[in-house]
Image (cartoon, rainbow, N blue to C red; front, side, top):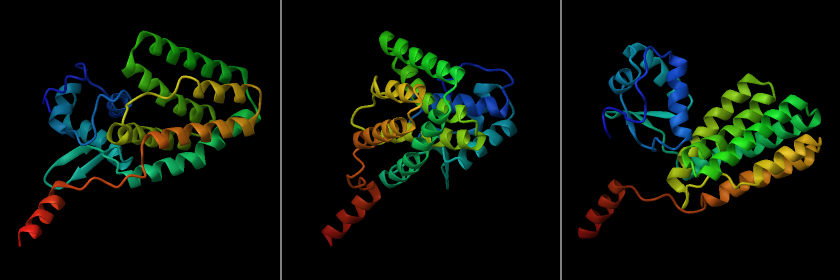
Length: 236
């Protein structure tokens, strides 16, 4: 990895929260790869802050599962296994249909307007062929739904789950496409007319679509060390 972290513009005096937000944005735009190593020194240089501030940001990201601390390696971007990804999506399939059901129970004009504006941003990014922005926006759609539900803890949970889903897509999907262009729109349409059952059903369909594209029924790839151990046994 390039030690200068070119994906981040030089930033002066960023707070711990802002550093976390910028790293999450890089994950949402799939600019950071699973297993990529991050060091306090690199991030402190990139953000022009003390290593203490960086350490706090990295600790929060590790707590949320976005970073992993490995012995003799340091911090790396998480690499969700297929089993972990199934667990992530199982939680999302329990939580997100209820989010949209609750929004549809009392649809507000301002909330629907924000969702419609977000869909327009997705459409514009898709039209321009700006894949990084599109991938980020399609992920942030789910965070916006949680935010509109008015539950701060739920928004925090969804941020971590969405980030891990982005990383899982990089690892396990055959294509790294954003969400299909019509599925978010059908969810918003159901919320707008107050049809909670349709909104929940559309969300569940959408998440199953994501799950299918990840091919999570396939076995985990064999590690290099396991392969070497097997090769050694074959020679004995």
